[in-house]
Image 1 (tube, protein in one colour):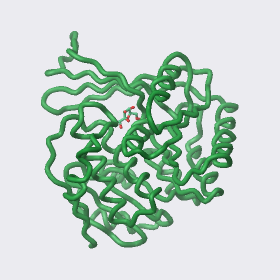
Image 2 (image 1 turned 30 degrees about the horizontal axis):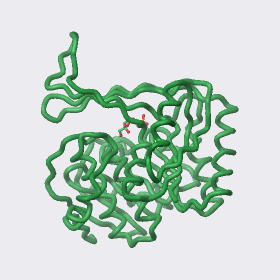
Image 3 (image 1 turned 180 degrees about the vertical axis):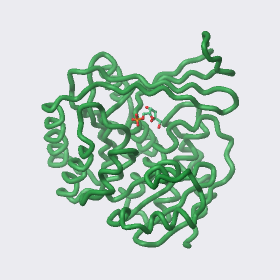
Length: 314
Ligand code: TA6
């Protein structure tokens, strides 16, 4: 069983537009609204692989109720959110001009000290009562939570010997890299990794290898750096891997990183070997990019794309 943690969920609104016009009115021909925030995309894709998931995090207000309601209808998903006084947010993705993607992400509600503490007790209860074999932690920290809040969650999971996959960026990721408490895996993309280093984004494997060899990345067994159409670069137990993927006709790349995390989580929960873990993760990421909906895959295509992922030891 996966426990997916989304501290700042959202209703993801997608507006496809042929052309985005600035400083005037745009009228999308279609609109889709889905429960989102990175962790809920992880949840949906893991469930599409028929892997049971408990989805948790903070939910509040009418938008929170809508998300909970939607999740209740999904097979393999059990929502178990911690209620808050604030209102859950909306996030907008505008897909326009031949594959461009402009996102408007609300900050979300403010979490009180009491709610922050309450949530830690809530997940401790889940760890005690459910048989969780992996935890995914994804997305931005809502206002009111300290940058080391993810550390507290990982510490709790570590106490129960449950591995964690952390997919966050910016200061919360810095806090983990510079701290003593480590997750099992992280999944930065090239931009996020290079931002930590303060260098322009690069996909040069030699440079990426030098970065991941630094002390800052010690203590994290699995690091998967996603490189978009160029596949991924992986470090697992001190060994480096280059991962190549086939050419894709990309329909909507939003949520592909989250879908990669879903694949990582499912294969890790199934005790797969590293090559299979990486292939599963890349396959779910690719399948998401080929769907219109965010955080969604077509499981019927899984095997054929899985075969096309090449993992080479370096
Ligand atoms: O990765 C895409 C996405 O998950 C959208 O679905 C949207 O909800 C957003 O990212 C949220 O990101 P955040 O880091 O703010 O949680």
